[in-house]
Length: 265
Image (cartoon, rainbow, N blue to C red):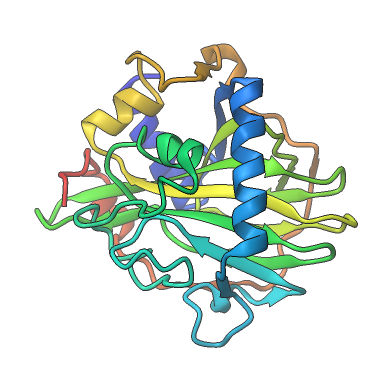
């Protein structure tokens, strides 16, 4: 997929004109995925994260139901409960502070240049995030429209766990890194009897990030690129979209016609 095709696909998905909702990008080496899962299991059992049900939480507007917790992994403070840096659209001054305790997680986070956040998101049994619309597009510090690209790596899931994007229902499988267009109206549900745990991160879509995640650059260690013909995803089902929460857009459709790679900021 060329850069122009990707940018146009993300733009159209963001404005509900078809485009790209989600893609399979990488398969994670089995032993490394297991080690990551074990570290995140230990982290979520022993560290203190943030409760998305708290009204002041940055994600509370998504109307969570059930127990939903977040561990912020890439920030300036090193506090797993500190979500205040998560969406400031800057990659400066942020790092993972706990490499000694969680070395595999540190090595994984370190693979992704120009990330602005990195989170472990836990949907407990029966929990969900209601339909909501964010935006993939923003105006950069250079005043050009650019993309904040979101990625998911499921570490634990249940058979019934589902993701909905613009009415398409998908199941995200462990050991697979997905691109996820948060400009689509989306929701997540875990009707299973065990927690669903995903690593979720946003990257500025710089030229370097494009080559790493979507292009022909060398894949990150212990990851293997999904062949281009297998990246598009077929929905398991379709669903009607009820009323949903919505953040105001940062970029108009007219401005989005000038969409380009983000500068580092």
